[in-house]
Image (cartoon, rainbow, N blue to C red; front, top):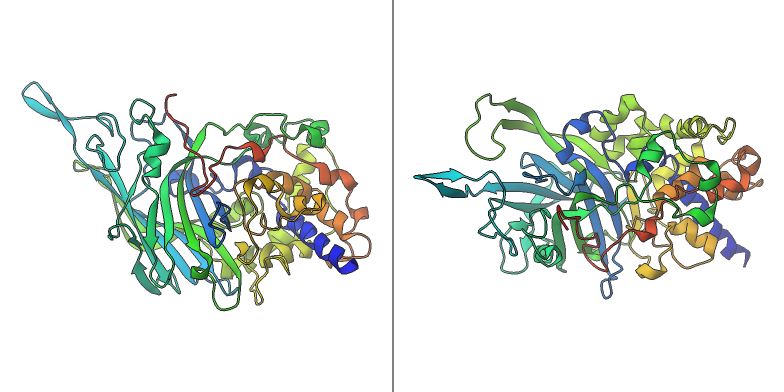
Length: 513
């Protein structure tokens, strides 16, 4: 009985640790919206959220869903060009299946935007139209579309640049090109967007994998819920509100009207794991060509001003939510976006001596409330290795990525605890399939983060170092005491609308209703 209780407490404490530092700016913008100076200049390759979880759709429990969101904070009315992805970019989802902090599988997405040059007879001339549509749209590659978006997927085994590369193919009719739906322009152009988008869920064959998978790439409603403006305004909320659990949904989700562009894969877990290891690590990146020349007299066409060439340069990276946004210091944000997990030792100081608790003291006007146990070596362990017995590989190199134990069964949506493992432990439940064991769309990483920032880990560790996070990690070093376990941002992630199955993220907000 004693052993069982101990095993339940450890995931709770470690989840709190893993979530540290996710509040101030990161919690405000899901995971990684506009988190580094350079990425603000190239929003088409800005990764905003990364999810990886055991598929909880009925009948799909042996599958893993991986979702990478890009191009954040899209306004539904953002015409006339809307939000096509960049054909001069490389979008990638990486999987480490042996714990060595190096990619073993990479799924590489490349996009092609074909201008159809639709024109109308005006007098004695045919004149190109200024819009990306010339009428209603209900089918892929509709004749009324002036711009068709498509993409290819390659799977690379081994190093992302020098490994073995093979094309992923369409299981229905073959071919290696996949259609992407146009964005949700509005109900006159696309009367039933949900049905239209559903025609772009493709069944795929993956070389080296015996089981078919699924892919969807297209616009979705941003699944994240957060009190954005309040958080950025030095957490401009009464302490009495954010420490009262009964007020968890007291304010509106300020990004409820925003869309993102989603790259979603559903793959059989046997296609992702290696040998007997059931834990996989995942992260997403985007790269641009090293050289860019701007043509002062561009030729007619689509996106013809830029001429790109040279080697790929990684400019975006996202694994665990919010790390670059609120853990990495401003001088190193661009460098983190260009780094690989195997080189994460260079950023260790940001974890051992995090600035976020001190910033929260300023933001909340509560001096002396930051946890006192420095250096935070406990956070180094939990951030970079996963939870032993939950999602830590048998052999692991410390590195930042999202880790998922594919042997832990999914939990149906209605029974999922929005606080992931920590909420499950507090409730005495049976849900170990949530953050930080991967991340599901329902998991409320902001609230978990608030708990972590203000010392929830050390409250759980107790006076006897029961969880092994260091003798100084104890309740007396947590000035907020038990109040640290009640913190929230007053926005309920669990109320964000989602689909019951793949691709899980909800139909995007339309330009008109």
